[in-house]
Length: 221
Image (cartoon, rainbow, N blue to C red; front, side):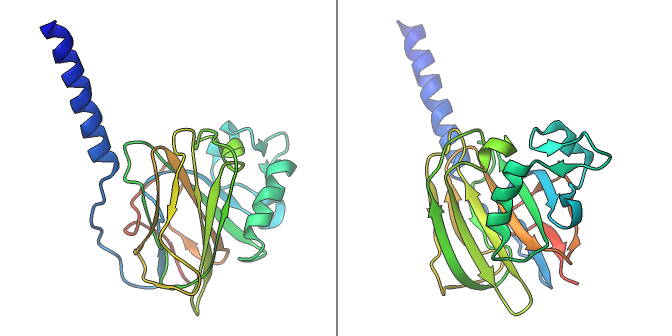
């Protein structure tokens, strides 16, 4: 009987510690200058160049089913290409699409990549596939936040995952946000994708770990 009670207490303590870790909201040192910071904590799982031939940056892409590797260069399969084009059409014709996977052990607070005005927010219902599966995750429930300033316009897409069933957005249209400001949260494992106009100096690569509001992912030219 005592053994059973000890096991139950241990499990309760582990759950409490997990939740404390999950809901952590560490302060971040926001970098100054003309740059774009990561919208989320986690690992960069994909960087897609939406310019000519829609090439993917990094050989890591060969491991994903959303890409066609039968040719000399890597291209995005037509089905998912259409989805990304819809997402990026209000940002720029040629974009970089960076996806960051947040594991259950990462902080899940999302932060503004740039200073500017929130031009729009849009919540879309969808599925709840695993957030690290690029092809399926793009069909998941998501919330899009467009932020613009005099130099650049970007879009942050909060994407729910298999465990994450709740997306929180802290912003609204016409609201002013500072770089690194908290703009939302996604519960448990999830993904944040940021769409950036091409022409920036990208500072990250696939498999890099980044911190929301602190890690510079690109410098403005």
